Length: 239
Image (cartoon, rainbow, N blue to C red; front, side, top):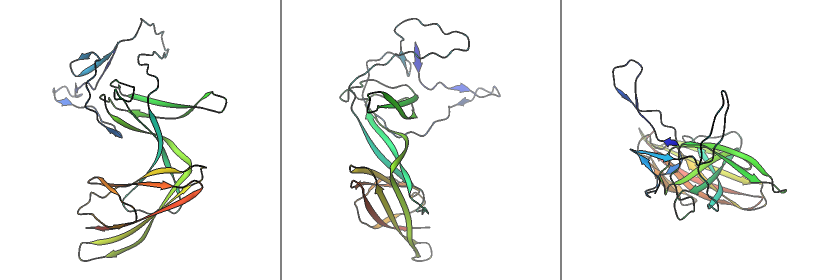
């Protein structure tokens, strides 16, 4: 059986100090649902349905989770660094969003590993469209899985102006131009990061944004089919 969890170990010099394993960045909103899956301490057990044999230097895939009809949605996300400009438009990320809650149909905790995404083409054949890694994920979580860069959805951030407002404050006007070459409208999650370096305020924005945490603001931007959208934001910062 597979035992899934992060196991602590002592360090290499043998002094017995606990060393936590490195954590990878995730885009997961942790869930709070209990699962009926068996546990071993703080780890979960995933029994394999039958005995399997692995030969020397062989790799084998074995199924231990099977769920059908799980709801998922595809979207786009663009992350911009500290109020920076780009000389040319950059691709938004393709993002697959789903939940492992009971209501969504997956109804299980997920062990850490690589999630691969396949989409059926016009002939009905599954084609690989991207992958990413998830952490050990409790049941009821919401997962946003970036799978690659979009071909037709671009964003160009531009620093329009930056003026000093006193000894320690600056006012920065940003413009984000979003383009969509697809034949259907799309929604892009526009993320402005790097805002945790002091007292940062939004003086004005052309679309209502959300302060996700101390370091990021987000806007849900609708971009029409074969069209463009523009978001302007003015920031007041300490630096």
